[in-house]
Amino acid sequence: MTKDILIVDDDPAILALLKLHLGKAGYRPRATTSGETGLEVLDEGVVQLVIADWHMPGMSGEELCKQIRLRHPERHIHVIVLTAETAHEQTLRAFKAGADDYVTKPFEREHLIARVRVGERIVDLEARLVEQCRLEADQNRLRKAVDSMEQVLGVISHELRTPLASVRAMSDVLLTPGGSEMAEAGTFLRSINSEVMRMTDMVNNLLEAARLNSGHARWNWSCFQLRDVCEEAMETVRPLVGAAGLELRCSLASPEMAVFGDSDALRRLLINLVNNSVHHTPTGRVEIIARPETDGQGAWAVISVIDTGTGIPAELMPKLGQAFALNSGMIGAGYIRGSGLGLAICKGIVEAHGGALAISSTPGNGTTVTARVRADLLQPAGSRHESVELKDISKEAA
Image (cartoon, rainbow, N blue to C red; front, side, top):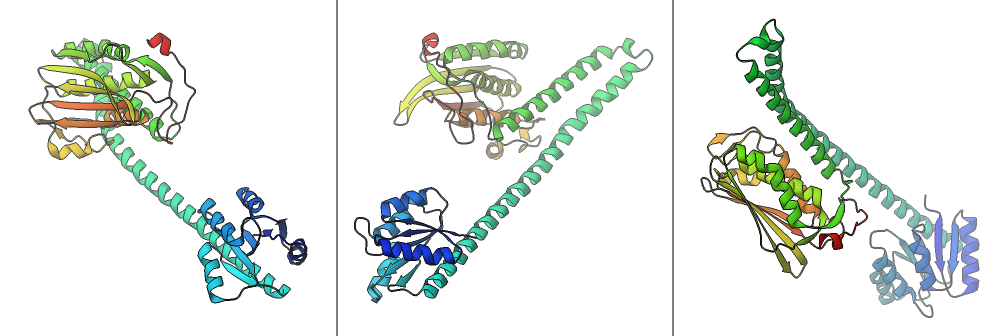
């Protein structure tokens, strides 16, 4: 129950009388002679009941009411005005300023306490309603989280059960007497290794997606040259691209492009995007193009991964970047197994760098994925991502 009450009146005798009455009624009065001091008390966040004189030198009761509503719009602070005026115009003026009730002077103790009791019940009811809304919101979030988890578990069980069954069947064959001497033994071992690698990638992607969505992701922020990140990513994906018989290109509009961000995360972004392109490009090339850009918001780095692959049907475009949204949907002319986690992680990385991911594609004519990230952010963007201490290595990057 609300028991703290702020009294604002420039008359010491009235203050003493109000403190006496309220104290005997079981309240904890806090008295001040000015509206400015009263606002400082309210800023502490404890008091939610106010009794204020309407006519005061300096900040009047009317201005005090207005300031309370302006400074604390999210809090229900019940304001009772003390006034000697009973004209309809004056009471209406008080309510328009933000007062909730008024008591006329001279006041009777019983009448004053009754008004305070009403205000107390209103404040307590407001607090219960706010708490109820908070609990309902928490329950809704929990319900959505459970529904989402059930969906994810269902998809994961489908994505993992099939390869696990295949791995078990092949390993059972290899473990039989003479199994390791079979002509198919090498093929079985390669298949087992491939399936284990795919399942490992899925688990790693799940952990990474959970980290990004947890609201507590930590980023290793520094200043670095984008050229170095592109070269390191190229070295990582070059064997995969070469094995697929594709050409790999990389071009930077400016060789000296300094970026503030997480270099490891941007490297992961490029590797994921190039891997996606390789999987859907039977012949041709995969190309990385990076360029600087400046607008009214600041400096940007625009990185595009372009392929000459099969492209993406228009009906699948809205699902891209949503974990498990494709559910082994069709891309190009064939079906793929995939969770969509890789592209969802890419979106999380780009958003942490203050940017957005854009995809354009035409079936049969390839796909272009463009990541536009801020190059001048001194910490991760958005409240979902935890700020970290900036390690300034700009001199090394230069």
